[in-house]
Amino acid sequence: MKNPQISENIPYDRVRAVQWENDRLSLIDQRRLPGRTEMVALGHLPECIDAIRDMVVRGAPAIGITAAYAVVLAARDRYRTDPAGWRSALFSDLELLAAARPTAVNLRWAVERMRCVVESAIGADPVALLLAEARRIHAEDIAANHRMGTLGMALIEPGSGVLTHCNTGALATGGYGTALGVVRAGFAAGRIGPVYADETRPWLQGARLTAWELVQENIPVTLIVEGAAAQLMKEGRIRWVIVGADRIAANGDTANKIGTYGLAVSARYHGVKFMVVAPTSSVDMTITDGGGIPIESRDPAEVLNCSGTRTAAEGAQAWNPAFDVTPATLIDAIVTEKGVVEAPSAAKMRALADS
Ligand code: MRU
Image 1 (tube, rainbow, N blue to C red):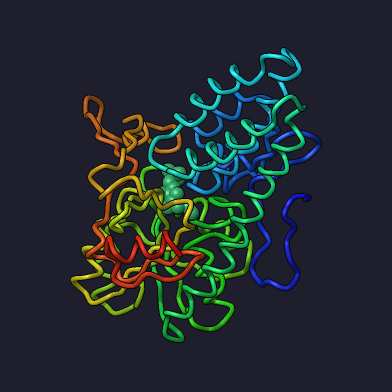
Image 2 (cartoon, protein in one colour):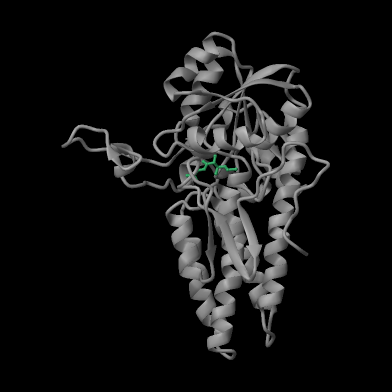
């Protein structure tokens, strides 16, 4: 299987952030967007762990896919160094990799899929088998996004305004995107009218990445500061808030970029619908509810500075949780590639997992 190609038949699907090229992993450096579109080529596991931690690549599914290719690189190095004992060294590598970012469950999910291949590759050079699995994970993610785009946009009344948060597009996935995949499909079908993106402080995924992606696709986008979201809803400009997920617990509680919970509270108050779009690789049935989801705490410097320049008063401190949890009761629909769960509950999530 080759790198998942961009299909001519699917409109608004031109961006790929993760590629396997010339026996290395190639990533768009998302820290540099939108100013510069720079690719970085990674040949070894430690570089991949740094790239995930430092957010060269980010977004739950993209982190998982990156991890899958990182296992290929790690296995290649370990097998070359020690063809007899490579497996036990690789198992330690997998633990380090899985710990690179704590909230997005896709990372652990992808590492476990790769671990199964490592365990079955007894006595053989594992690299070809692992590369085939990484490519499968990548291709499956894009296919899931196309499917979720179709399912999600079918819930939206024609011409609706929508607000999205963070970046959930091609940059955050194997391609096309989750919530932004619904925006792409809905815009192509005329179901989505005005698209609003919020800046997504402090890392500005909305202003820098979502706006960049939509501009690449010629989909008009209007940026707002997060503080404008409630007013946007009050003025009746949007009918749906559409977001992604880093981890969905067994009862439908959903961890996503900080600020998502506030949008859900505001949406319910204003009668705006709230949609979570995520592949089943983001669902963690081992966690009963959102209280058990580990929330990444990032460097306060991200809040105190903007683009490397100190903006906060000297002496001030900052609290910087990267994610929050939206209770299932505030979610109107969870859209996955396996189907739509309306008004999610533990029973409905169990039925989805078993389907
Ligand atoms: O810190 P980030 O940029 O990795 O956070 C990303 C998000 O919160 C996304 O909404 C989520 O991962 C879904 S991406 C399809």
